[in-house]
Amino acid sequence: MASTAPVSPLRLPSSFNFATDVVEHWANKDPSHVALYWTDQSLSSTKKLTYSHFARQSQRIAALFASLGIKQGETAILISPRILQWWEIGTACLHAGVVMCPCTMLLVDKDIEYRLQVSHATTFIGDSTSVAKCLKIRSKCPNLRTVIQLDGNAPDGVIDFRTALSKIPSDAAFPVPSCLGPNSPGMIFFTSGTTGPPKMVLHTQTSYPLAHALTGTHWLDLSPGKIYWNLSEQGWGKAAWAWFSTWNCGGTLFVHDDRLSFNPRRTLEVLNKFPITTLCAPPTVYRQLVLDENRQFFTTPQGKPQALVHCCGAGEPLNESVVCTWKEMTDGIEIFDAYGQTETVVVCANQKVNKVKPGSMGKPIPGVPLVIIDTEGNVTKDAEEGDIAISISDDLEFFGFFQGYIDKATGKLDNKISTLPNGKRFFLTGDRATRDEDGYFWFVGRADDVINSAGYRIGPFEVESTLKLHPSVVESAVVGSPDSTRDEVVKAFVVLTSAATPSSATASEKLVAELQNFCKKNAAPYKYPRKIEFVDAAFLPKTISGKIKRAELKALESRRFDEGRAK
Ligand code: ATP
Ligand code: MG
Image 1 (cartoon, rainbow, N blue to C red):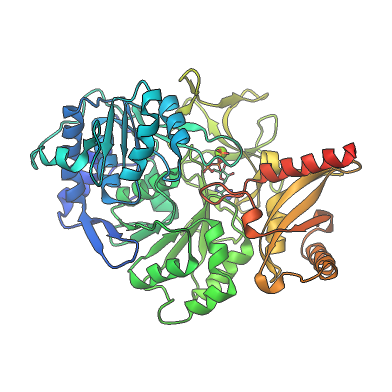
Image 2: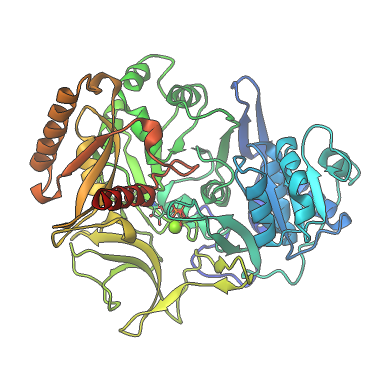
């Protein structure tokens, strides 16, 4: 496997540096090999930058860091839009062993203060907007020594990146620090914050930068010549998934410096205008793309993708009906759903070598000891629900997962490895699934989201997928709602298409009954939503990356239940 990756991601090498072993590798093979294909917001200006460019800039920026006193092992927070410097600086950080911590542009001053404090970062690098936020709270962050601004005019006390870099000779060389090993700290990411405050995840020099060769090979099917576009913002682990997957496999990363909120029409225009071969978008995006108005645009000369051959999704469960509609629209392109976390590389996926099973998250990636277990720690039987876990053993070779969560208060690492009653050790993902007779995993829900109703366990995803089959439904969020006789009942918050929005209370009741009957017919009847509430799209609480925060809706239902009892 991984015939295109310069270093094998299946055995931890004795030494590894992403800048030299991957970026320089491709640069040496072909100096004209394009690593990054960039376009601005309006799609009018484009740039193609080679692996050689990034290899060179990495040396220079690493030398700049040294001249500014930024040392190996220190943390640098990086916040910028999708500008080229993000990847140049990222490569230089890995080159020099500076621990890079990318964060989202949407953070406000207080969030930046929190992240600077808990990560003990000594350096903040950002565009002018982010630097302005940082300066407001700089005095409250005693570890922060250096602030670097990437664009505009840097204010007093802030280093102007371009001016400072221009003083470093273009042939500057920076040797990789000899103490930098494969398990040295590499990067920090914050989780999406779907279930609570985002957790701080520490990755090593290899657990993301090298192990994502698995992601690129088995799931994304990348190789030289492929052009890969991933829609997520730079502050999330997913941006690093894309970066490391593509470059390990010698592909070209496509970047649209989109600064506006998501617009399905723009996504289709980008696919039409550029020779993108491979797309990854979260399920929420695919759910929009398959709506009728976009399907129609898709059939026009301006709406048809130019070179698309492979589509992927991850981050949330992907409904079977969306996969099927997308396949119809694209004359046969399936969506390869995959599963992973900020804490891991891709660990389970629909893979090119197997047939796609719509609605399933595929099979464990070769070399990844991913299992479904019961509470004792034993692997479950086919079709039996259990916890998704990575099995940990002394001879474990898979290294594509984090070192631990960094505790905010103490700065210590918690690796979250649990020993279960049968004596075996696991990293428990917190997610539940079943496995079918062909070895495919089927997501049931986050452990906390699974609904207990009159002795039945009901996964919210299955109910949401059934509702999505109905033409009136754009999307829904299904949670357990407290009930005095059944413990919980299934409650669906449903967003309707504008055409289906009922104009009166009677029409609304009629549609509720119709959807309930529809669910009874299309899935096991005990799973139907006994309660349905129609809501606007904006009502559904979502993370910045677009994931539904079911825990908040569940809490809302509990509050309503308590209030109802108090009356
Ligand atoms: P937090 O940990 O802060 O609550 P989060 O778990 O959403 O947020 P991420 O690391 O971005 O943060 O997301 C990983 C989670 O996303 C997984 O644990 C799982 O619940 C969900 N997920 C990822 N891929 C899939 C998939 N293909 N199908 C279903 N769920 C998925
Ligand atoms: Mg999580």
